[in-house]
Image 1 (cartoon, rainbow, N blue to C red):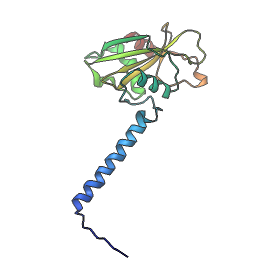
Image 2 (image 1 turned 45 degrees about the vertical axis):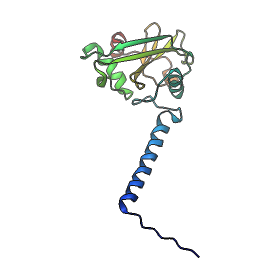
Image 3 (image 1 turned 90 degrees about the vertical axis):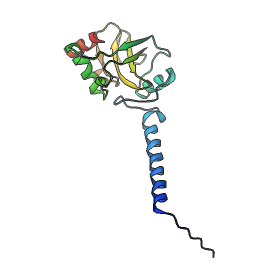
Length: 174
């Protein structure tokens, strides 16, 4: 029987343990964002670099869309929000997005045609607001503007969404 012994300074042992812990957190963070491609429509999602990433994000939310955006626009988030933005900011906040962090910043809005929106006769669109490869907001709206709501798939009882006055104001604001 052979026995090996070694002395490892506590400083090296602590450094190794903290490096291993950082790796575990990095893997978990990746798995929770886009690693599994099933993401929640709450809080910002990073690493959205191209159309495939946007489509994967939307598919993770349960949406089927056109393969290419029907509109791509650059928008300027205002420095100051007036009352007309109250409903829209609340809509985004309810989803875990905080647009107030992006005052004065330029974001891109990618709009796709939804192909699996439940019980809807008119075309429905979904839009993502992207800032530096990060989803910072989004909404679903009818092409006629008759409704606007968050990114989550409505329950069957909510198949025909109703619009509140605040959402009407929000729709006009964006």
